[in-house]
Image 1 (cartoon, rainbow over the protein chains, first blue to last red):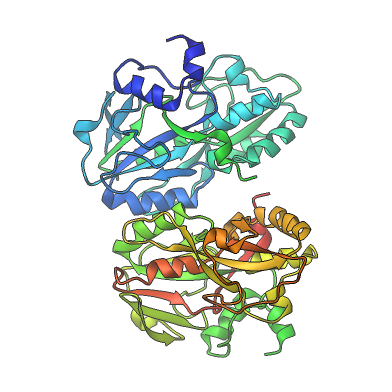
Image 2 (cartoon, chains in turn cyan, green):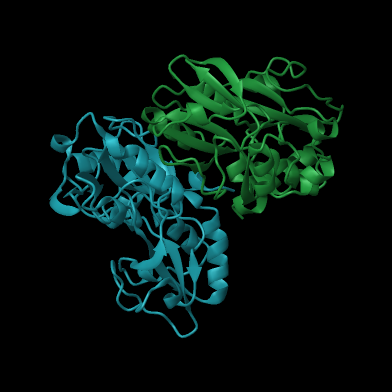
Length: 264
Length: 264
């Protein structure tokens, strides 16, 4: 599959390729303009408290869709099947990763509830369209992610520190980026912090906990956004007997367009 | 209690008066600048699906706070007690109103989950501050409410048509009102419809299903916002064995300021 094709195929076509085993790579850059989502699947008895965790922490965990117990076809992509239409899944037991698979049909049953949460791909495209640089894209790297000392509001067994992504920008670009991402409240919205990393408990920008470090120029400041990995930390704890998530970068591609998610 | 006092006392003071039985009136106009909320209390087994109903219908049912099962003190008003701090409650069984009381302590137990949902008082004040008239306030009436032919997204046993409030304005004021209320996405946000009532299934503006009719001038058009009464219709069905709500107009007054709810 050539990159040019990947960018221009429809979400339904991409999901068809994935289901047929013909696409196993990350989904970054595929189906330009369409919303991609984090996936979390939990047993029904944990659904209320995880939904409440997301409601209480809308910046890291913006809810795009939640399915009824046992349902597999989301409202944001009619006809899709969450058991087969992501390139790669992770299965955890009591917080420990047990398996990575490309089809979860044999692990999914009538008691499971699926959550689709927003990811930052949508606003990165909006930033670039507005001429604001996105360093990780420029450098062809995964975005830098850090665990902060900010505690999310917990809910039942779900608790996590806030995880953030960081993109370096000039102060002027940071202001413009704040305006642009404010519109995208369902894909993390406005930044949570600008400037001094230590103020939110980040010791060393060169050593992110997830993803890759990027170059920061003399005239730039770090700009931090809430990150969907927060939800993964919340569900992969020893308190949760079983959970399925997407594998990092291997997202669900929905039929929603980026612009469908804007508040104004 | 004089009106002037009511407008200027703090939410904690008002809740204290209510708890002591010294305030039994509606809360409209009290504690100017503070967010008031609709209350719904359900047995725990219905909590996931009602929370999901609200998530799926954020315009009529914007979530301000959801408490853990058995909890009575909301995060948006520490120290308050939802069992005693509203002037009047309604108890329903299978959709039928059984009682109206001023204290629900004897009906509340460890299995109950409380939901606080945004109401339109916040944005009405913002409209008036911006010089946009709010006819129902001018006429000292309850806002006009109508059941539309728009179906909310259902969730488990919860289903309802969308209920809307209507305020007449000139087209120019309607545009300004759209800008202003867009900021208040947690108190119903931007209008859902402007103009022709029949387009959303409203036959006669002079006969609202709830509240009072108001005068519409020659140069004005009706402007419709999603209404919190939608959530009351969704919970008062024969499918739901027991639910407690606030009594219309007798809201919970939180410690949040109107401006805390704005998106930008």
